[in-house]
Length: 252
Image 1 (cartoon, one colour):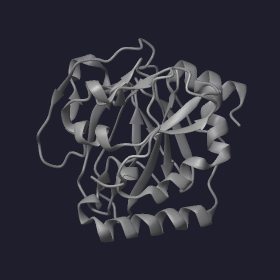
Image 2 (cartoon, helix red, strand yellow):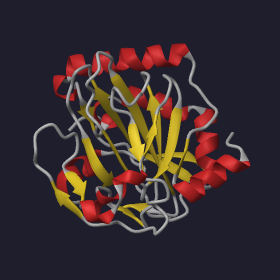
Image 3 (tube, rainbow, N blue to C red):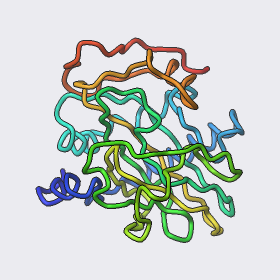
């Protein structure tokens, strides 16, 4: 469980790194599952943005009761898993995740999500760990983004440089098995992996069920995945009464 100070830290700064670490057997299982995924779908060697559309076995990691307890502390007792992604920066791969807010991509109204980022490998400055702008979530609004079609980016939308100060960023270094939680409005990024070690991270996206996953307003680069994703009620009930929890096709 998060301590009261850690919950306060999440509220004030938009993220928290709990006193928690997954066991080695869970990490071995994640690595094996990723290897199997890439063998089947080589295009996901670096990034898979809709993991459960292609491999439902990753859903098992979202059912970790300790992780669900922490999510409940920050978004309430009624919530659903609506997506999982895998950011897999292989050694010496130059993919960069530009500065952005997650909510710029997602058809959730009202916009709300807690993202759990699981370090499958050690995540350091050298191999491209996450970087956060503390407190950048506090206005509860999306700032101006633009499309960046440059090579070497894992995501296409980038926050305009005049919308934030990169000098305020903090590096989120994690041991393998550690996790971080961050808010949907938090500004964040990561640098390329220039090291000889991989940096794989699994994300679990949870939204309170007072929000609705609106496939009818889906657009942009995630649109085809928005229609294929399944929602999974993890705890409580659907407060909105409008979310569609029917299991959809496991692959586009």
